[in-house]
Image (tube, rainbow over all chains, first blue to last red; front, side, top):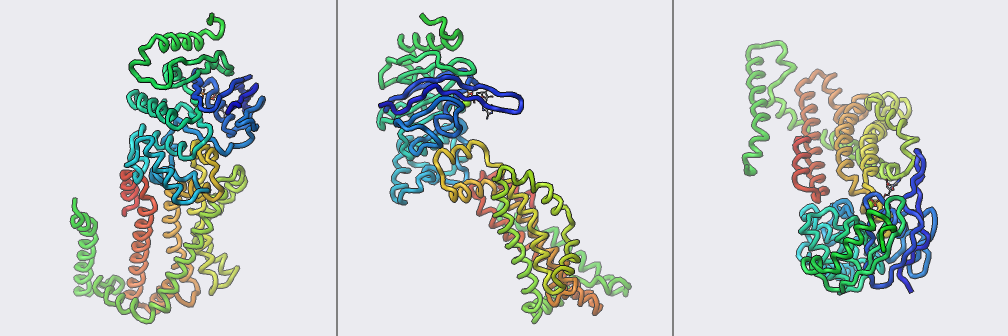
Length: 257
Length: 266
Ligand SMILES: Nc1ncnc2c1ncn2[C@@H]1O[C@H](COP(=O)(O)OP(=O)(O)O)[C@@H](O)[C@H]1O
Ligand SMILES: [Mg+2]
């Protein structure tokens, strides 16, 4: 069974000055253990898509199902990593407390154990006592990832998680994500406007059209589970795929085959 | 700069001003100037203050006065923060109540005294006057702070399904805390003012009551002693509150704390 099923999903924002259809008629699935990237131009409705999946907004049309159950309100076993890490973390809590904060139903010892484990996984084992403002942007985003991991969601949503860090840090965080999902078998749906990133990270790439977003193509990424920033990006498969995605983003479905 | 030079820097002008005042008033007294009766030298004020503050007046007047002030301020703080958070996070409440609150806040607090005298009588009106006057800065600042929780934090809280308590006490309250403290500091000075003013009018005890008594008995040195006490109390409470604030907001980046300390003279 699929972890996530999206059926005929559409959302129209109603405002004072008319209404705006952000996404329309989206259909796709994500299987357990997959890392699926959704790539689309800025403003096409990627965040809207993630918000409807997370149950933060009720879609105007269509349904989202998690483990075969229709999403109505925020599901219990889902976590989100936002682009804006500095706002998403709680500045008055230490790094460890930030990671533990959503785990209120667990015992204190279990919370601590999970935080230690998650912080070690993102390479921040020594930073637990620091406050977010004492860390660099990339490290803050690691904390946000650790918080999501400690929550042990069956589905991890990521909304342009690496768009606000410098290129070097972005590469590090991308490899961190690949390593974590190899080790922990996490199911991830990540949206990005960065074509290279979508191909580098994804098992599959969903290409969205301009607003209102519809799915233009599903592409399998045959690059295997272990990738590296230099070799993979230079490989023939990678170069071919990124060109294909770029073509799709520019010309829509007409230009494919 | 080390601790010693910082302390010296803070007090040097104050000490010099008092010394100058002492000199001028001593000279005036020696030359027999008429006004010197109303402007006694600081040393004389200090002696009188020592006798007055540490006499039976301490239990009879200072404790009740300070008690009213701190009690009224604390109650205003609790009500202001609780309602401020509730109203600040309510979608429509401030649209209805904003104008009313701004109107009530705009009334100069001392004008509440005659009203409360009429409403509850001269002996009981000090406490409600202080509470009613001190509540607005805390309430409106807390509303402001509670509203300022950014959209990403709201969504983060929803995604992780935080409980109502976690959301209110763990996210909204700390977000609002810098504004809450700004409000509490304003309220504290209003509480001090209202304490004295309400005691000037027919109170059976308190610092204001002693100030009026000294005036009636034609004792300017005693009046000065009570005025100095008010200054000392205001300074003391503000310093303690600033220290509390610094502890409570220790999670803020260092530089923003220093800016705040500068702005408030702490
Ligand atoms: N709350 C909202 N109300 C009205 N319009 C919105 C709202 N959020 C997003 N939009 C509009 O929907 C479109 C898609 O937004 P978004 O999903 O944030 O795009 P993306 O994440 O792909 O950049 C944009 O044109 C944006 O202006
Ligand atoms: Mg977005």
